[in-house]
Length: 299
Image (cartoon, rainbow, N blue to C red; front, side):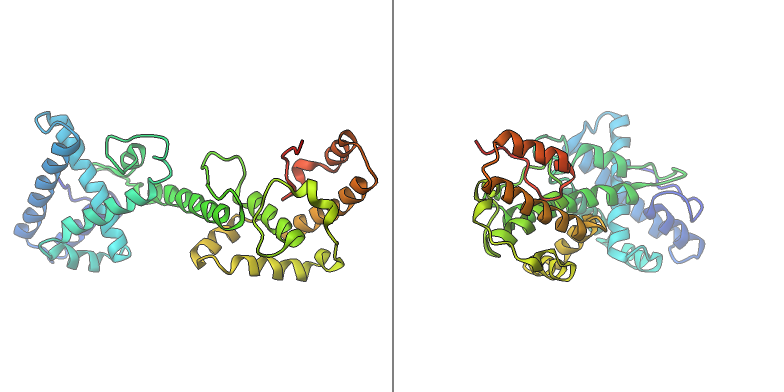
């Protein structure tokens, strides 16, 4: 394993820290050599677990994995602070802890990617590891940004799972579900307005819409905003943040539009309109554009 020391603005975070420490004479040649030696041992261990340690090109791949994963963990543990990173690397287990942290971060972010797939790296998605892995002398390391993209994907899936569990009678979340967080949350808001704040969404809104007593306040923006905020309260702040970030700026207005349409749909249902006419009414109103309006068919 080679950890090549290059310009401060280049390469993996681990290389940048070591380069800075050497240039500023904070680390001696011996200390740098010790860290390199630990990296070699870690690469051999990783290669023994996932590769063939007797094939040199695979051992080289393992060393790149160690550099990338340790860089990820070191950056996270020290908040990208090179001084803090140097202090951590000075500790006997600093490099190992950095790698362990990075590996646990990859494991979490890989959760939904591996629901219907397998990886040669166990709990870590292969594509994610490859996007983090890097030679020490690479001119540009995008491992942190690549991880952030997958982490955002994980957090979105986690929030969708929370919305499904809290608001829907069938609380099992399928990451391949075509509904977005915004669509699911809007349906939950409308359903709870109609049938009570403690109800869970079932595929019966169209069937039971005739039982609803519409209230004029439902169409008031202030009321809708307050109602939405109350529905979010049981969720952890981190999940709330992801949901709010996923909602369009016109989310509240779109919900009100759907509520207005539901009132028209109810009137047509009470008049005895045929299913075919109700379908035409939905299509004319742009059913796909009615946020939260269910698209299932109740026979």
